[in-house]
Image (cartoon, rainbow, N blue to C red; front, top):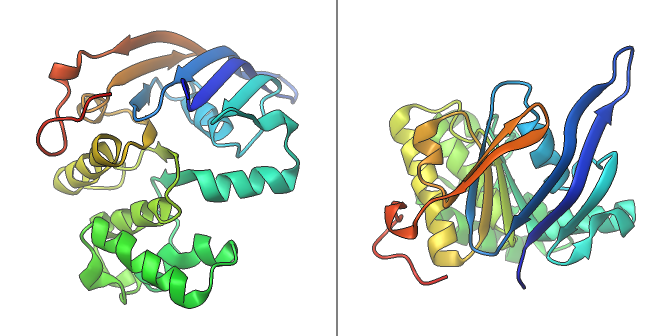
Length: 242
């Protein structure tokens, strides 16, 4: 597959007393196993673009294909299944359920998809081990640090083995050390697991870990630059060939 994400002429208009044009004809093509950072000033449309790419909201016009499937042709139920099975979401606010333990939070997408409780818990435990939190699996979110909560959120995004991970300011609520651990972990998923990551950030240090940086302004892609592979810090060791 040449591209995991294909966006053709995406527009998004929020109607109201004054129409807001959040996207103005975005074209975007992302190959597999690529880390793309999206940057731009507040109100530039970067989070809206991420939500459209994740099939969380439809574009006003244009076409979006994920792994070759045209999203606009799917029913609501089919879009829900695609999001649950092929896309992992990581948000700034963690969005963990406070009454569920870490392992229960991570298992939730599997349980919603009909996976038996014992199998869902086993796979959730494996995902928590991937992010170094096997010793925290029975802790409630209130009993672990912010950085650990974000790693639980990453594990929840990974548990379905999605092709695409979408992250919206995932380090925004973390201190620099915890943020670096989360970004190194996400970088590793691209390098080692061959997953595709699209991440919205305002932090140039986070964007410096990406293969490609896209600057959005006023609903347009203002700049789209790829970094030479030898300049991209790998998570661990040498990066595998693309």
